[in-house]
Length: 387
Image (cartoon, rainbow, N blue to C red):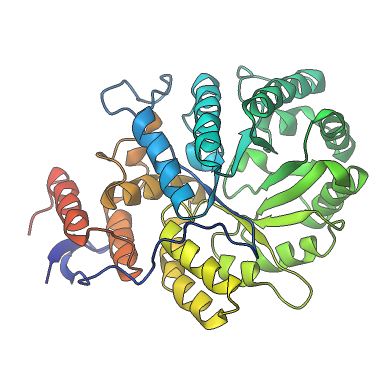
């Protein structure tokens, strides 16, 4: 039995014995017919490039695109160029634009579902007027649509600064929705994911913000495929989805409560656009296949072991979850290194990563447990931890 000496939060070392086999999650290559499901995908940095803080992002394109094919092979759609891909945390606009073009070409080659984030992060630092914010959105929307992907209109830090109230959000989003060529996804990213987005939709009061959000959707329902809600509040998400116009989907972004929200209730359910689906793609595919078959017990069995992992992965500060995502991809063999754009591999502590290692093993997520153990030992040795 493979054993690894792991650091605990109190500074001691403790042996952990890994399970001997991966879970029963098989490959389900057919997309779910009962739910629409996207995995928000991370990017793989080029370890030989200067991906230090403040430098332009340089990606390993082969590994980055190979991971998207991994998600498509499991029957999941890919949500690209979003916060999981380090938008606003190291992935600059030139690299983002290239990512969108390349991912769209790969999606077309295999018939994979793809949505891509459109924001305003090409704007230089500083304050900008509403017209400049709208023009920045338009530039990115044009690129996403020209590439053949469905746009996700992401929350904008620049708009938070420029807007004086809900009416400014309505004006900017209304102008964008009137001109898009296909229905889009609107993204509400809570401040736990990005503190700079506090007060989005024109109010710090979430009830007032929800009213403003629903009003924008209601004015343009034919242009909104769905909304992605990342507030980590299951009750609020359920209340919101019950207010959406007919035909507008609610894509859960709740990485704490996704099994219950996707399963839904007698009134409705959430679809999925989740960062946690990046590391748990096999389990997610198994769960969704069971749900398609009406096997609610199988659905719960597939998802239940992933919840402790998800809740640790997205623990505070939540916006550093990307470090854990890339760490797990390295352990699982999807990339050859644990290096991130902007040096973000340093954003989580060694005890935090050690707990992720354990939780992913308990969820049966390692295709090769021996490889995962060897890489964990390597990380520990580099940190000076021996035992």
